Length: 185
Image 1: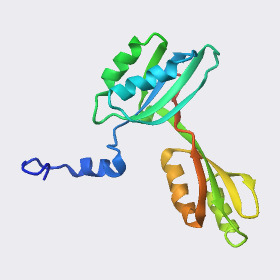
Image 2 (image 1 turned 90 degrees about the vertical axis):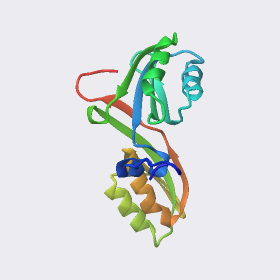
Image 3 (image 1 turned 60 degrees about the vertical axis):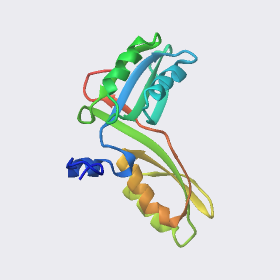
Image 4 (image 1 turned 45 degrees about the vertical axis):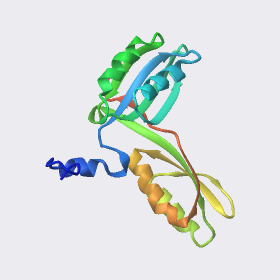
């Protein structure tokens, strides 16, 4: 049943989608903006005022130094994303916005994991790193730092496997994405 006192029936798919605070209706927005001071603050402020939580945010230059690309990942189930897109278009420094469909785009994230590893556990940590096509970027007597690139699911799976060894530190970039084929954002 739904809310107490109602006869609303809950859908199992909706319940499963809300596990972990996410509703499963994720949007990856690729936004081309002028490379100017304050643009990031105006764009993120617009999402904040509308009640959206930005799950990931990555900003970087494009092939044109006057233009930057912002890649935002937001959960759009509780609020309509199209209204925010219309308001983004009104911002002076926004050039183009695209809501990337997962099946029509490629999304990746980079993560660095500093893992506790002594002589006994190092071989197993390195084996997991190899399985996930990771790369060791630093090693000391008591720890190893691993770089993993891939989807959100891949990074979370690696984290769950190495956490028992002792996760000292983890840093993630947030997703970046591009459309498949010849289309551009």
